[in-house]
Image (cartoon, rainbow, N blue to C red; front, side, top):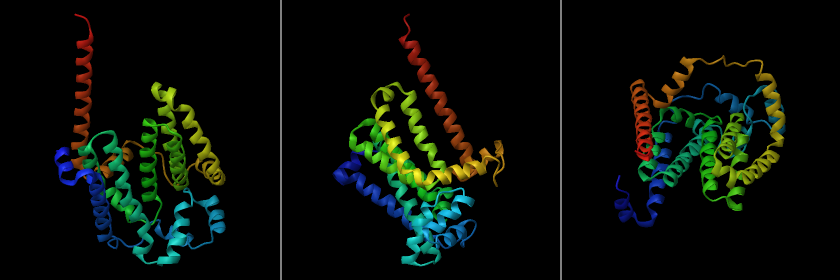
Length: 289
């Protein structure tokens, strides 16, 4: 993709126009099919309990739900304004899903190039797997939004560990952790990056610990829910132990179709092979003859 040509056409606002286009495309694409599947699965759970007062909701979630109640709190006030129609209860998920493409684009644009950003945004936009999440009145679309937001801010923080970015990262990770208990995995991965990469360990490790402390203090109201659900889930839950078939089905869902799964697998293996060949060539060139 000719980046210079696009910049000549759109000028300095190239990224703004592309981002606006992808956001609108996501919004329209997801609104067109919002009523195709009726309210089903776990959606009635979220809709029903979002009608409770927040203290009553917290008490219930402390004993029976494996997610935090942030999304249900948003849905609580949203439905008071917009009602309980199918499109109304699913609109927050559609908005979060549509906004996710912005940060996917920016992560790729700022760390790779324009072509990568556009390809990644297209793949996300037309992912059947995420389309399903955008049509579900549950926390998952919001979870994806805050994961992409957190990783975008973390990568910016790595490049420029200023105090402003430290606070922005902390502010992004707080709603992320309130979205789903699995969100704890994201700061943990960021922490591992700061530990195992020498350049990050010397430059930003101490500052990242500060963000962890800020985020941890803000997460204290949810700590009781986390501890309670962990002690219950450790003895088993409605999910059985996974196996290779389960992992295969997850990868298949992400690639939409079996033939695309095998195509993606072959491309991935080819990329690894090329990487190893280039690395071997560099080693040979650097060795004295």
